[in-house]
Structure formats: structure tokens, C-alpha cells
Length: 369
Image 1: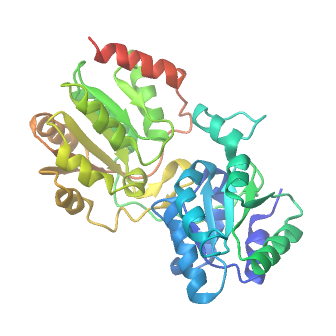
Image 2: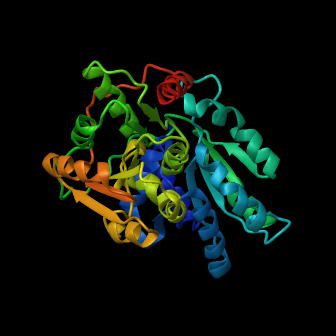
Image 3: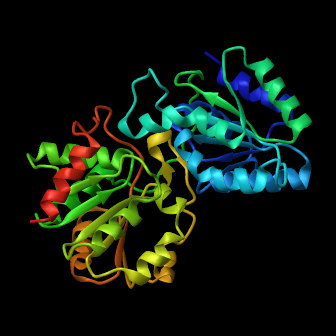
């Protein structure tokens, strides 16, 4: 096991002190350490991983130094374009250090959405011509090698991070101005929905809580599409579904997911039928991967959604406001609801006991009736 603060300190000795990326559960301790020990302008939590690669390119051009881009391996897809068409040795030849959490590593137990990505993590890097090292306890010589590699070849290089590699690091957390929990908000939403209305819920704890709320109430799961992976695409999935049915489709999104591919909302809002309903639960954090903050409390999401073309945007901070807003959401066209909550979930929160394929088939059968 690597002592997290010692790893961070050694990076500083190499002037590797500019960080950007999307948090990952396997990197939560090093991400907490970075947030605690460097100023905000030296740690940019980006909307998506491709943004981070582009920022690292710009930073190198301005300073000659090397940015560190951190991500879960599921974010590799977002990085392919800027890595190959910007940073690659056949284009601008820009070095950076990639820290990649290896979810779904072959031979380890993980969730369904990580299995395929885990299998192809290393082969994707090979295909892109990016050298990688699987980080070990003897990390100093590996960091030395990465630094010399970037200095010599002006190319990106990756450190692959396995589960449990970094020691626990407890960073401080800001208190929330809100008292409502996400699970309480979801319970209020489900109470209003009819049996012929459907949900597409975002990845992470939101989908897990919806599954358990249905279980607790003795309901089935055929009305819920649990987006266990594909972060940032929940709204597009729900929008596509709404184009194929006249039944109401409710997208229940998170702030990190909203920010990741926000440009899609202009297309959605301009083309949405009356049966597409958008709900954003905003807790200001990437809670499912360690609680690192998003910028969602600091930007006017209500105004952004209206600017994209949503006609009515409701807000709620308690269960009564949610229920009132849901009644309006049901009957309004191009409408959205923003619910503000605090971070946190039950310590005994489980995971879906049905497979993604079972989830898909059950919903398709229900939608066809």
C-alpha cells in the first residue's frame, strides 16, 4: 500500500503540481489529498476527462510543465479524441501524466458496467500508442521513469491504479446548506408517478436508491432504466426513449452527469416532446466516487436550462415542494425540475440484484403494452 500524502509529496519534488480530471472511487484518497493540500487553481475538477486532457495540453504550452490528468478508466473514451488528435506525437506531441483507476480489472469483483472497460483498459492505451505502468508500492522509481519519459519523448504516459493501492486519506468536507437527502427526494418523486410512467436514472447511488425504494414498497423494476454506467448520457437515453413512446419518460439526473455533456441539453430541449421530463438532483458533488465537489452550486443551472429552451424550470428543497413541482411537471411541455439536496446515503445501501439485460428486457416489455 502507498502512503497517499507521501505519494503526493513526491510528485511535488518533480514539479508535477497541476492536476485536472474527473474523480474516481479508486483515486478518492489521492484526490482528497490533492484537494486538501493544493490551491483550487492547481486542481481543476473538470466536466469530463477530454476537457482535462485539453487543459493539460494548454498548460504545457504555456509553462513547459507537465499536467496530471486523473480519471476512472470509464473516462478513457472521453479522452480518445484529444489524446489522438491533439496530444499525439503525430500532431502537437504534448506530454502529460495520466492517473487511471482500473475498475473491472480482470480477476477482481466489480459491477457489470466496469467488466468490459476493465478488460480493454490496457489494450486501449496500446492502441493509442500510450505507454503505461501499473503503479506498485515502489512508486518513486516509477514516477522518476514517467518524468524522464515525458522529458525525453514529449508524449503522454499513464500510471494504472489498482483498487486499494492508496492509504486512507480523510479530507475536510464543506457543510451543505440543504437538509433534504437524495433518497428522501426520490421517495417523493416515486410517490407521484403513475404505473404507466417511466424513469431513466443516472449512474451511481441514485439508481441504487431507486432500486431499493422499489424493493421496499414491493414494486417491480420494469418502470426504471438504471443507467449503471455511461455517465453524462442519462438525459440522451431518456430523450431517445421519449421519441419512441407517448408515455411520460422522466430523466432523473445528477449534477456531475449534467455537467459532463451539458451541450446535449440544447438539442434535447429544442426537440423534446411533451412526454420528456427532466429532473436534476443537485448535491454539488461527485458523491458516488468520493464526494469531490462539482461547480453545480456555483452556476445558475435554472437559467442554463431555460437558455437551452426548457420552458418551465421548477426548483425544490423539501418533499412538499417536490410533490407540488411534480404535479406541474406532469402536465407541462419542455419542463424541468431542480432538486437541491445534501450529500450522504445509508451505510447499508445495496446494489441492484437484477442484471442490466434483465432490466432492459423488463422495461421493453412494459413499454410495449
